[in-house]
Image 1 (tube, rainbow, N blue to C red):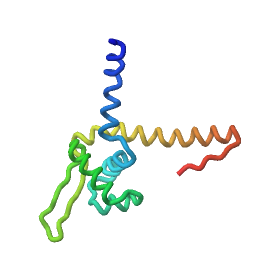
Image 2: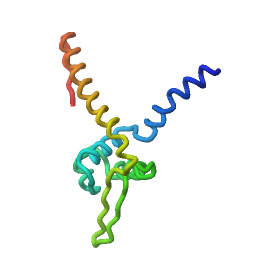
Image 3: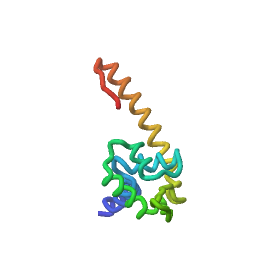
Image 4: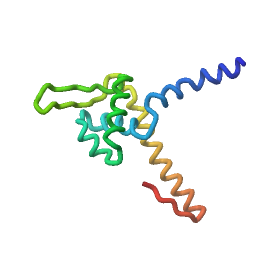
Length: 124
């Protein structure tokens, strides 16, 4: 039982990280804000053309709730809303950069592996 509890404790950090930034869109949203700075909703939609408006809204709300991004509303006509990384969100910089690097290495690895086995795999 102690071994199970110890294992659970060791994996809790990964579990928490995946709960907060897991999924298809959250890491991409965070990476865009990290690399390109403050963005409006429409700019994020253009950067992520496959995400629906509802899904993007939901993901932004969750990231704001977890205090990884800041939503700033400007009292203009029409209203203007901008999203940027919070100080807490910036702490993910090395994680997001490592995820990106790992992804490129994995693509290369799979291409090399498939070349050796005589199969072709398309990468997106």
